[in-house]
Amino acid sequence: MTYWYTMITKNDILENNSQQKALHQKRFTPLADTLTDQGIDVESVLKKLDTFQIAVPSWALGTGGTRFARFPEGGEPRSLEEKIEDVGLLHLLNASSNAISLHIPWDIPKDATAIKQLASSHGLLFDAVNSNTFQDQPDAKVSYKFGSLCHVDKHVRDEAVAHNKEVIDHGVALGSKALTVWLADGSSFPGQLNFREALQRTQDSLQQIYDHLPADWKVLVEYKPYEPYFYSMVIPDWGTSHLLASSLGEKALSLVDLGHHLPNTNIEQIVAILMMQKKLGGFHFNDSKYGDDDLTVASIKPYQFFLIFNELVDGMQNTKNPELSWMIDASHNLKDPIEDLIQAIEAIKIAYTQALIVDRTALKKAQSVNDVSAAQEVLQNAFRTDVRALVAESRMRMGGAYDPLNSFRENQIRKQLIAKRGLKTVATGL
Ligand code: RM4
Ligand code: MN
Ligand code: MN
Image (cartoon, rainbow, N blue to C red; front, side, top):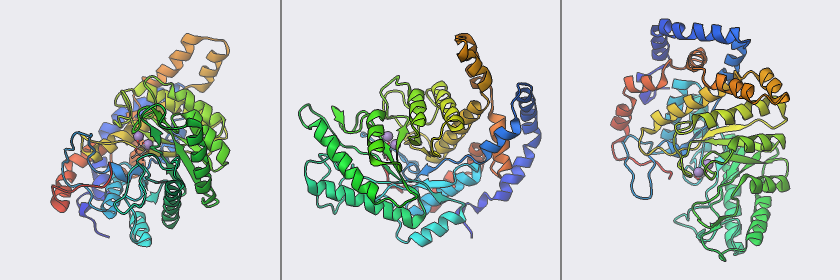
């Protein structure tokens, strides 16, 4: 099959990688030697990295905006097919984003079989499907202005439940295995909502959606402390998400979106507790300074991000938590969306690698004798190790580019996209 980006083929990537070989070895060999001296099995770290995949949301391929303005750069995908092409390009460059997560109804596939084929021609799968009950659709008979699954009016709840069931059906046709539910439901003024009754109605509605899940599916329940409502949200925190997931059953799990916490919340502790309960289902990666800022992963708080990955790795090794679904959920309003996604995936892999090289035996030992300084040394030794050459080594082994961002720029991909799609295209999403 021929695509617009045949100007950057697998062969171009391999050729460029071989030109970078000497430079790469100069960086990689001393790093591998240092880690080996520290007792780390570099090969097994690389193997874990090789298979690590992060899903890309279909709504992150266009330029995001604020409620004030949007400044698109052009060449945005005009259709689901073009969104798949963009994720295919990312995957070609970094070998780590082999799945796309769709938001319905923004991305309803007209022909599921053809879309599935297109995705698989790029080596892509379908990650969790996302429902949308935070906007009214043009043909909607009811309004979500005062909530969806929690609404006081049964007609609105029924509509929202039916929508979620349809989203599951679309997902089944594409081979997806999970539904992510993020509810905008809440209130902006005291007295607007009866908290207890709103949560009860939400639980009942979610139960109907849960009962529609195929046997091998999961439902991931997201939480968020405020926005779009500013006084209360029906699922404001991990505790409420966990409570709902527990009452629904084994197929229901909590989803942590990094931007959905009040400032200074100890997210790594939330991760640890949910994994202990076998109830962490997945992740929405982004970074935030103040709220749901949807900034590039680890661009603001890289140490916190590392600490979160440290708990994830510990949990994956020492708990029975089910396999996690990894996904980016960011909005790019200043940077080229594809460049921002390249940076995000790199940041995730760096933090994962640093968490993998933590000396867990030494950490355990320090904790067992309350040696606080030693425990800090162990964590910071890993965090302060520049592991970028290790990430590059794994990426090249998997056929990806030595430096994906540079390849994207050198090959003038945005220029090609603008030439093909136009300057004024707008991708669906937020
Ligand atoms: C929300 C939340 C959801 C995402 C929407 C677009 O803030 O993070 O995961 O589906 O934004
Ligand atoms: Mn999210
Ligand atoms: Mn969000």
